Image (cartoon, rainbow, N blue to C red; front, side, top):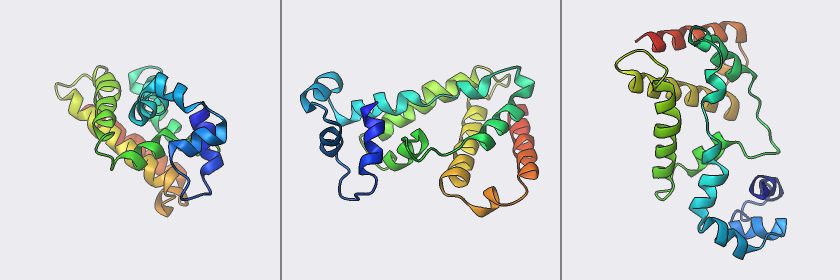
Length: 171
């Protein structure tokens, strides 16, 4: 939890982004963090990547998933006081040391879980397409605030997202 709380304390200081600053501001013993996590990479995986899950989207009967997923995406708010796992993944994507861990989490925890619920022989590819659509939609709408996804007829946009998800699930 200290990792998430510390982000708010260093958000306004562009040069203060290292873990040492996080530890110092939270009064955390660096030796204990090193002992329990071993590296920044392992801390990132434990604090951020393990939180990524598709489970909230797979509730209820499969035929209702497109509506449930669209509802979830439209009702998801950005919490400025906490680290958003999506933002953390986007910021970390350029790191050669963390990219394999991000890929592994997406493939094993998200794509495989979704693919296991889809009926088609190309379920894994379908799952990857669905997740990439949702990742892009969420990034552009909630993180970047793209006008065409935030300020126009939300009911119509919701309907389009449901339709696209239905088609991707049918492939």
